[in-house]
Length: 287
Image 1: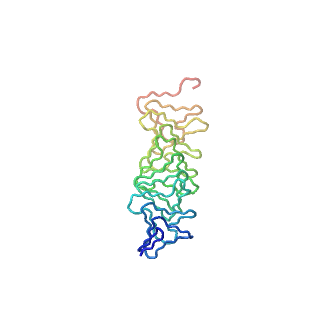
Image 2: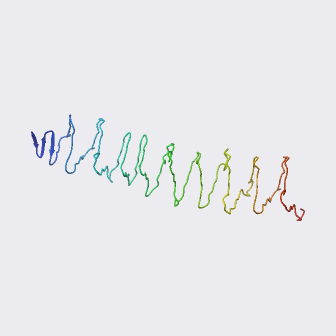
Image 3: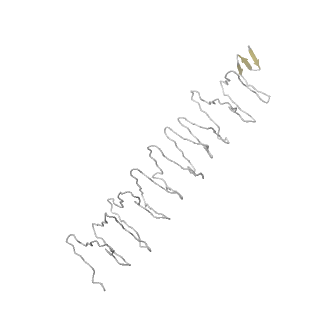
């Protein structure tokens, strides 16, 4: 049996149209109670609406929706440069492919009430050609973890970077390493505190503290002569050793030089080894 209306024919459960199917009524329902509905054509297949939304899978059924899911090399496009917005909303959204590009001439937002994951088998790159790249720039007090698991090499900045700033605000800033930690600079390196002490080697770990011990001709300066600046050198039972391949000078421009002037009853040794010339005092003035 064949039914033909204009250039439309119906045969064996199939409806074929060589021109077009148009409904002048409010709705044109196409439904099947027992099988599959297939829309297929040799040319382009367009689904458009001139005055309302185009809904696909908008009922409450739990069936899957597949777009371009067969094993063919397809170009799948969603939206265009003039689109107002493109929204992906689901409990879990996954985008996979050999190459995945997200491009925008304006603002691009990825928003989730749960977790957003970006993962690549060869790499994940986030770049900006004309503005800053911001991570955690909103006012939400949640941790930011970078490289928190696995044996990773973490790099911040480069040799051509203009500057690198680390700011912890009112919280603490901790840098920890299980092996060697190096701080190196091609210019001046400064370590300062505007509101507290500067501590080096102040924990209870019995390891050496070395300052300027490299084989280089360095000038090592500790302290200054400003107002009440003071220098305290304290040692436990290991003692204090001062040695030089040249001379050692101890001077004071505004007070006495005291050696062994406390109340401890311990020996005072001066030039007790070697053939030395010992000079005390001079003939200047009332010396």
